[in-house]
Image 1: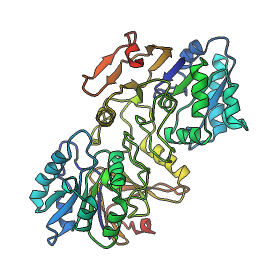
Image 2 (image 1 turned 60 degrees about the vertical axis):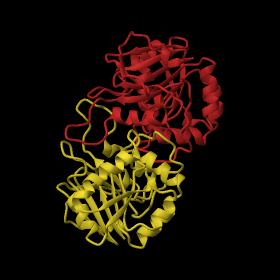
Image 3 (image 1 turned 180 degrees about the vertical axis):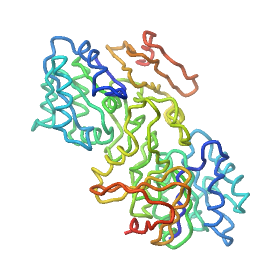
Image 4 (image 1 turned 180 degrees about the horizontal axis):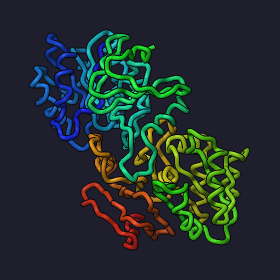
Length: 235
Length: 235
């Protein structure tokens, strides 16, 4: 299994998908030519626009972006794919489309057989057992909270430590603690912006300039630095 | 119909439920003695603790807090209630419990017959047609996104204007725009912290020190000041 699970497409003040492009290239390698792209997390812009935006960046690293919305038969498109790329946006809309097109099992099969998967933001949420640790607004009924379940833990992308000054709502950490109250036997990894997880079978590497924050019910919260061992999350 | 829909229990640096207590007293009035409290949004603390915390504050304004979790028959407790109070916490957990106990219809009936409803945060989300504009993490399957549907528009409680400095995730406004893309014929009201809506039949009053922000697909975003007319939201 080969996964590159990226927290966020874009760091503040940078160009779209710029910071992770080198990592995507290193991950996909030289043999892959074409990636099957799922643009379903786009809501306030079109799938065409989304695919073009990603193609612009992927041109720089030498991959074709073949968007699934242009295929008459999305399941067959997945069966033929060399690599699958799932972009961010709204996790709920993404999940609904994936469920409506019955893509969970066919994508899971392909990934378990070894084709690479790249996701960012909502695309990283989808790699988890469920979308129960998304930050997004539930604008549409997803027809079930289950996701691809490639990994046995939950990622919270765009993990952030504090609220804006003066805001009294729950912090992200408090929200994750609530998740753990009702989901006690699972890890949650807070994946800060600018960072990503590379998963090769049962080995996980954290890439980027910031530590990840690991939560589990009954355990002390820990910060794991890039380079430290994260493989315990796969057990 | 009498609703008091509060953005947030507590302003930063203040005591729990302190700022809205005068408004709650003015709203409930002198005839009500006992309120039926729904503590189901509590996740990381017990229902007992939650009810006690609210009772402490309600003692100051002269109301008994009768928590529904202490009743063997929650539906019967609703039928006997003089007023219903729904506290904040996690909207998903609140919704799940309300659905599990089959409370939507019985509570809606009571409120449409005129007993007062006070909600804050998750309790304000529940007054809307659905919980699709909640900010909370979907830690549990709610068994449907439908809520009490007292009002025909959506509230986004804890509405905030900006992300923390340096954070690149979508802003609240961008999330609401996504909601409007897939829910085009409904208003969303961004209810800033420290403010609340008092709804008396088809009349709405905004109370507090900040304007509300009104969104609708195809319309310019508008800021409505306390005192301006909001009754168009009820049509």
